[in-house]
Length: 117
Image 1 (tube, rainbow, N blue to C red):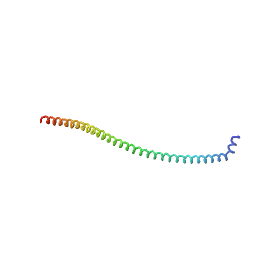
Image 2: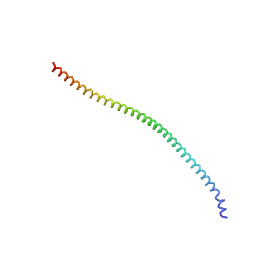
Image 3: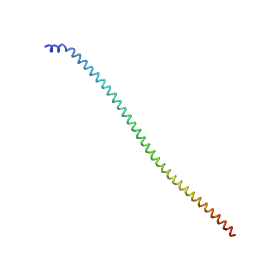
Image 4: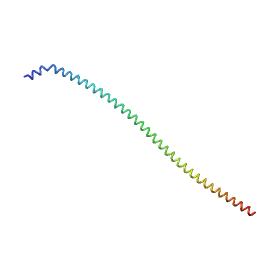
C-alpha cells in the first residue's frame, strides 16, 4: 500500500524530472548537432585541401616527367657531341701525323734533289 501511495505523491516531481530530462535531451541534441556541423565543415575543408594537394602533386609529377625527358635529350646530345669531339681529336692527330710525315717526305725529296744536282 505504501508503494502505491509513493507513486501518487511522486507525480509532481516525476513531471519535473521528465521536463528536465527533455530539456537535457534538447541541449544534448543541440550540442551534438553543433559538433556534427563543425566536424562536417572540417571534413569538407580537408577534402578540399586534399584535392588541392593532389592537383599540385599531379602538376609536379608532370613537370618532373617533362624535366626528365629534357634531361635525357640533353644527355643524348652531350654523348653525341662527346663522340664527335673524340672523332675530331682523333682526326686532328692523324692529320698532324700525316702532315709531319709529308713534311719529312718533302725534306727528304728536297735533299735528294740537292744531291742529284
